[in-house]
Amino acid sequence: METTSKKPLFSIRELKQYFPVRGKRNTFVRANDGISLEIYEGETLGVVGESGCGKSTLGRTILQLYKQTDGETIFYGETLDYVAPAYVLDIYRNLEKKCRNVKQELVKVERLEKEYEKLESNLGGSEDKEKLKVLYAKLNEKNELKKRVTSDYLAIVRLVGGFYVSKDFAKISALLVEYYKITLEIRQIRNRINDFLLEIQEVSFESGENSAKASALKSKMDALVNTELKAAESKRVQKQSAIDAIRAEYTDDEEFQQYEAMRDNGINLARLEYGEMRQLRQEMQLIFQDPYSSLNPSFTVGQIIAEGSITHKQFKSNNTRAQEYSMEVMEKCGLAPYMIHRYPHQFSGGQRQRIGIARALSVKPKFIVCDEAVSALDVSIQSQIINLLQDLKDRENLTYMFISHDLSVVKYISDRIAVMYLGNIVELCEAQEMFESPLHPYTEALLSAIPTTDPNSKDKGMIILEGDIPSPTNPPKGCKFNTRCRDCMDVCLQVVPEWKEPKRGHFVACHKYAT
Image 1 (tube, rainbow, N blue to C red):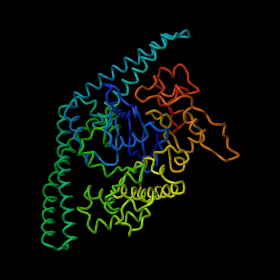
Image 2: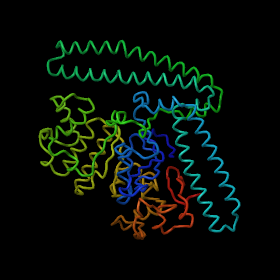
Image 3: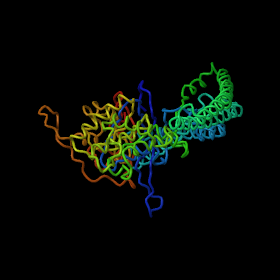
């Protein structure tokens, strides 16, 4: 995991996205195969790699457009209290059982680690291939078990903190369940208030703020706020005080405080139900690669841009107010407001991509996945769109994941770059560092393929990658890059390389940096 003072917007751990192969039982395309990284607020994370490496799948899985197969995608853009997800109640109700199971699994991990260390020490200097195979198998078994148990362990500790080591699970579990039921009740009340607000805005727009209908709606909303919402908030404060009182009893318990420091308010998107994820959808948007096929040809520009804001209840219908807002967004994206009634086929490729950007921007997101957002455009238009994205990022305080196969584009727009190969991230660091000091052999090969006219370049010639990319349904054992790597060693054929940090802030998965 990265160590930085920046605030994470996403914390992704062991994300997997497998797609079943039709007609082949128990056969899967491993599009994303255990990805872990942080995405920080306000940054642009560039993601590069050859076609089919899983870049686009990663972006869409983070957004939960594909329901991820395994792992965690923790989102910090909203609080647990705001979303009140059902999975939290499940953990609270079964707190004692879940804690006990995780602790038992951790014991298994420790036992396996000791077996591995013993086997490794007995090899000495005369290890043979059979003993090495046993060693590698043990190592892989340990790593897989450790990943799974760590995920379960962190999921619980993030929610309950120091209560993980408490002996009074029954009392604590009951309090936490009550607290979250009240939180869910508050969310439902707030949804009703938002519905009233939307209705009041609509009525006020149509017939004036002082109309009898608008006044009646305001009265109903005020009653809801002053009775139900205040009563529910009061109950939540009482339950929170009771929970805090128990925590205060453990002030001098070092083990309790150690786990308490791990408690946070992140939301695991992978465990959200459809309605819960839909509630968060406006926080996370996608700009598609093709600026034409991604736009509805039967909708005008105004309808395309307004559709998201109406769906997420910023407006009740596509009225004059909604159209005025759409024109404001269009202007931010470099589109003239008079174009609002035109259809997609009446625009150029660059203008269509601006429409796609405006559509994403209209719901006021925190995070946008730019999925090959400039690859279908002419080079001259690419620079305009990239400059627009940069400007919007600064003005709207956005965070981007910028997916591309063009390293020169990624270098220009990105704060950090992640290099992907066959479903895994193999290297991650600051953009300038990546270009100046690449560590992974695959990254070196990608960078060597960039044409240059600089006479002072340190170019040592193109590194040719031999062979084809292996099938994602049957990837090689050990390091997936071993079939094409010029630095391949025996260990690369058997053991999956661990994620290491050879230089501060520079991460790589390669056995060359194992020590």
